[in-house]
Amino acid sequence: MTAKIEKVLLLDGVDPVCGEILQNAGIKVTVHAKLPKEQLLEELKSHDGVVVRSATKVTSEVLAATPRLKIVGRAGTGVDNIDVEAATRRGVIVMNTPGGNTLSAAEHTCAMVCSLSRSVPQACAALKAGKWDRKSYMGSELYGKTLAIVGLGRIGREVAKRMQSFGMTTIGYDPMIPAHVTAEWGVEAMSLEELWPRADYITVHTPLLPHTRNLIGSEVLSKCKRGVRVVNVARGGIVDEAALLVALEDGRCGGAALDVFLEEPPTDLTLCQHPKVICTPHLGANTKEAQRRVACEIAQQMVDMVQGKPLVGVINAPALTNATSDACRPWIELAQSLGCLANRISQPTDTPSLSISLHLYGAGVSKMKTFLGSAVLVGLLKEMASSDINLVNAPLMAQEMGVTVTVDDHPDSCPSIAAAGPEAMEVKVTRGLNSHTLLGNVSGGQATLYGLDGCVWEAGLTLGRNMLFFTASPGTSPLAAIATQLASLQACLTSLSSSVPSTKEGWHVARTQAAVDFQSAIPNARLVAQVSF
Image 1 (tube, helix red, strand yellow):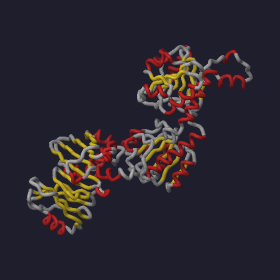
Image 2 (image 1 turned 135 degrees about the vertical axis):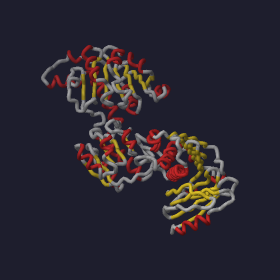
Image 3 (image 1 turned 90 degrees about the horizontal axis):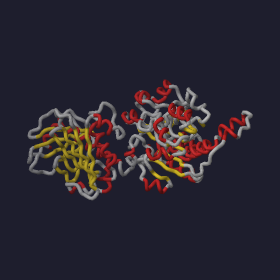
Image 4 (image 1 turned 90 degrees about the vertical axis):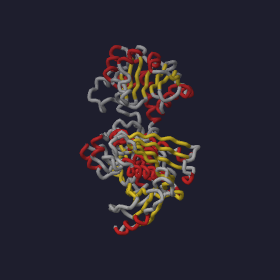
């Protein structure tokens, strides 16, 4: 999908290079620091996109009040300051830059581990206060110690690589990465239950999700070695701060290094001021290099989307990664057109159930399996949905409306109608006891219909402008009568077409420049649908 992005709001001190890249691509830019909510809502009314760091909260209230907004860009990794579900519901793309701050966050994590082992900040503060106190700051070597890494994505892997150079044993947990892969990085994979008792140091590198909230709590700390040390440079809330404070007091935890907090900035400094705690104000990605890198990446990602290039970093619609390419765009248009036509020719029934079956024939179109189902939904549901629908929110809206979708690819098979060629798309829509099957391809780059309920157009029927679909009894041709009636309505008729004659009821199509109020009865024929593509 492509989006018309004319104006973008840059907030939270995003590096100026972000604005430079956008402006060079012809996109207007407005720059502000963090704005009060009322001013933020007012500014966003005149912008198509916004780029934030971690300070600005893009809530459901903000999204509901800014109908022009099409994209939210996060210059960084975490998106917990953005209501992704609300954005998805409104069809707003949410992007981040997952790799931009990897090195900075990994380096900060390693610095925290090293500082914990030697009490560097505490000793520095004591000396600056005039105290020469070596006895209180007896350290321990990292060599031979075990570092448990929870989350082995980009940052976790970089941390492992660096701490291995200190002679640490690295163990880890990541449900998405097989053990034989982590072994190649020198990390022994294991379950969380196996991880805790072995750890001398624990570092977390996961997003803040319902199942990671308070992951490191009282129960986990009780399973660890006495004196285990905890590092969090990921997200506040992964470590239960209250439980951590208790564990620090009773000796279960020997020290903690925290860069992130549940509340930022924290108003209760009890944990920060504990003598065994090292803390920094969310500095993990706070390097010149990282901030410039993420600013460049998020700007380029927005420009790529506008220019129809493959998408990177899409959080709420990852299936759309390749949907913007020139090769995919005609197929998306075909899927939407077939969905729209299927909705119009399907007769409403007392049964609310609606199901869609999509079959993709040929190697090329089969690669588009991830997003063509959404494209059919856009066409099918746009007249039924209560709000705007696009490739981002179509699956969610379909789910809420009880619409089921199945997509099957047949890369080595051909469609049942040979005229459609080796690459084709078949859509079957079932509403109660009624069902309709449509077959099309993108002949000459245009959405073309080849089959409808078993009837065939051997030369194909291009879908476009306003089209009236009639059925008629076998052996009859109502085209002359249809043309006469359209002429009486002063409609601009551009073409007439019939499916190949057969023993079953045939389809007859009239194309006009614009929609017409067609109320006339045609002998032996029935107007089933009028569709403007």
